[in-house]
Length: 292
Image 1 (spheres, rainbow, N blue to C red):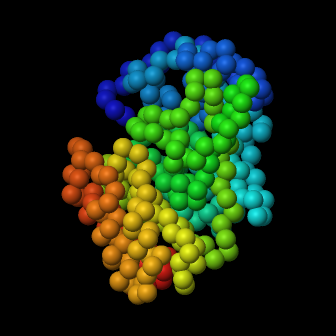
Image 2: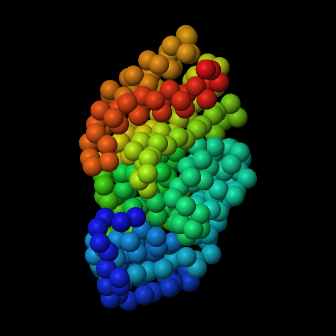
């Protein structure tokens, strides 16, 4: 990830490596705006080399045992710790079997070297428009558990990301866990991404459909097309009221391409991104509904 010509060295900072969650929260509470939490360090180090972030203190949480866990409970769902890497999620059986859209997203995020270091929580907290992680998580109605020394709160990821590099997090708070509800047995999900030679996606989509025979819940979430992840609520309604699936997919794709906010930048124009939204929507829904 690069935004310009990076410095060869990092700015000066004090490095802290707490051994417990309690110790990490106490450090963060003391330093507040002067500190940044580091898990994998992929995004933070890049920002620091660019001098876009220059914390006086870096709190490395990767050796805290409880943050390294992936736990699944039937009927409750999946709990992912803040230091779990993309590679670990890619290899996890439950993620592969029950959370297909998430598995697909982490499997194709960046490259294997990056996936071995990058964490899903870090991917969310970067809040960059083109990152993959938040898109399937929002489709699964995932929430974050945010902690400080004196408070614990849950917040939907859709509300946590406010804009580019802007998140709903106080200076003394850190994201400790991700919670995903347990999908119903008849639920299906998929993730798709379009990119060219650039390392950045031009458009992504995650779809969640409860009962493809007669849809009872549909969620369509898009990334890399706007300043933050967006849902196509009107397109979802088309699929919920459909009689002819093939026709409904085309109508939903057209609706999605028109209703969501889309940006134009150096990588792609607004019109081209709307075209990609339509194509990705058609492709992902045809796979879920198993129609051609």
